[in-house]
Image (tube, rainbow, N blue to C red; front, side):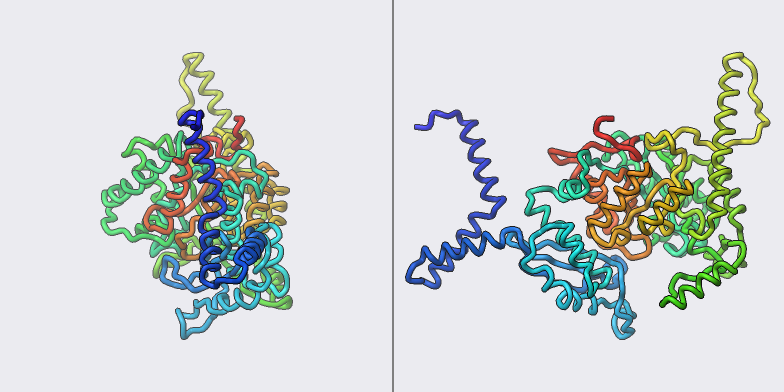
Length: 542
């Protein structure tokens, strides 16, 4: 009779069951026995031995790679790739191009060429290969190089398979890839108002976001985002905007033209639910979409690129049309200096956390001018605070007539060097561009999409690069493509401790899927800690 305690027996049983589940022993052994019974060989044990040897060779190998057209949130094709291994099938979906340009299918946005390239360029490369993420990512980029969407979707699907074969959660496996010992759940960045080309709105800002910087848990942050977006509907109605559309990244799209007005209604909604002090605003200027007189970046070939570069250099002072999205309106051209004054006005009136792509990447003078002006305004604001503190101690009245200063003089994200996140989206697409802006000290935050990294390994590397320079990181959905329900970016944000996740608004399942993924991780038994106020510099020891 077994003298061990019931608890010990239960523990051993659980360990055995876990081992059998991890290696799918019951399923594979049943299949081998069934094959033997069906074929009835003269020596069944030889066949079983051979089958087990084949199985052993395949245990961590790729058995097949397939692809198909699926649909993204706008009803146009997205590419879905499925990788098959001995432990099942693992899929990933990406909505980036290139497209087929066959006007007879989906208005030219079909992806049959990409599907075909998986069979012709990928399958033979990967079948039989071991699930090693860096090796796979290097292999699928060798000549002849498949399309960008194929490379990315295959990399993501293989990463999911490799995590399963390593008996790790996806974010845990990604943390291993990046040598991250202390992953964290990022602070959500909610897109609450959409404008520009993300909405049928005259607003030149692509999005206005709210970040619950004071929330202590992810659940609390999520609730704040839900309540603000729900309350914003009523606030807009009270402001005369009874009928409001939804933008392409899950925010509301009211017919508001002024950036200041957009910020006001958002903060009014936050005030109405009592969380005004808990959130900060983010503004995606997307300056590349409103810049005037520069090439559109679509030139092909070395000669065209050189001609475009020469044209840009001859264009003179760069200007921006902040009325570009006003239907039937006239241009309202602003120089980099004009935009600097506008941004400072915003910072005076509202608590702003982030400015994304405030100037075109070629407008270096504007970046430098804004940095100098911002530094001066923060210094002036701190000096004023010190004078007011001295006046209070001495019971003397402060100078009420002094010119107002920027609202936020405290550092953000537990980063002693950052008062405002200057986020590089279109301006930072490569590690070389990260180096450039770091040297100029005009950008201090990377917006990372999966497409920028090209592969999982590439995305992990870009995040590591930015963090090594002291930058903050915002992991993000693709900014110029309709989204899919794939939640890979949420797991990447956790594993690489990005600290912030910009996954759109809460109007659309394709956006909510990312926040739900974080919610599941946050409520798991071995949940990583929440980044909270340390979203720029998280450390498990802090």
